[in-house]
Length: 353
Image 1 (cartoon, rainbow, N blue to C red):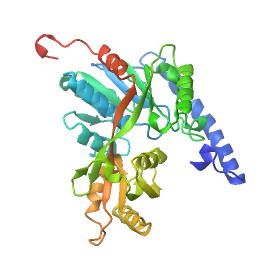
Image 2 (tube, one colour; image 1 turned 135 degrees about the vertical axis):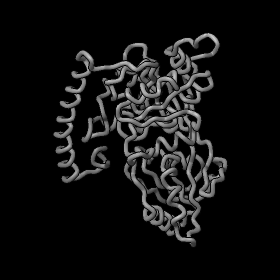
Image 3 (cartoon, helix red, strand yellow; image 1 turned 30 degrees about the vertical axis):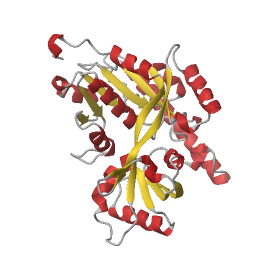
Image 4 (cartoon, rainbow, N blue to C red; image 1 turned 180 degrees about the vertical axis):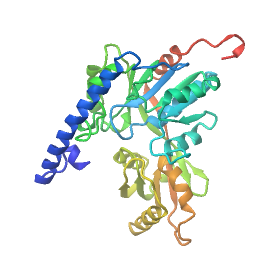
């Protein structure tokens, strides 16, 4: 990451960046071929119900899971029957991955199907839903969508300015021309001037008239290992060690600090890291040695930690907790709600959809 961002200096990182740039050229060629394939007859296929896609330009966390939960709650409140559809990246055979488990906790009454063939998943469940929410769907272009919502992380919106693997971009910023709406997430973690510059950049890359909204990941509470929950101010003044396997660990640190936590240690794993009992034990030992009063992770990581917590030694006294956050639109919430509802057909008479 330090090499890709340009933070690491010296001959080694320079050579590494040069090699990664060569690989990025190959990635760009493959991307061009894939885009051409989508323009051919049959390259894009339609689902039997409206599709709302949530995606991003970069690898890593921009807040797709909280946004999917936000949309699911909005649609349920409108009397709709949403179906969440995702690829299931990193899931073991027959099991849900961490995003699906987190969404199951957030939206227990909304079905979630994981299938690399998203069109097949929607068709199989067409009788049970009237709108599909496509999780991480911006690059899944073989499936037509009625609304493309693209998230930009306020802290790292354009993946260090390079395509994979030189940078974090899945597609160049010009791909924003396909977006119907752009949402800048973690807008509260950047200053006003940087946010204004980012909005201008998004407008420049997007199609004319594309709305650019802002959102923040608002802390909802703290989930404790014993099943109880506390308010976010549980962290205020508390010395903590943090650990996470998400795309933007620095955002997690900043959120904890804004809540008043004193972060004495941050362990960052790769996104979708498969934790073991040994990982959790080592993190707890490191937290204790750093003088932390708690070991805090994200909601996404916590669903993978929970089955492992019972395997910790009995003498382990460092409390384990997870910060729970929700997507909150700080600018343009009414616009997003209108855009979402505009793609849905009118309910049938008598409430039968």
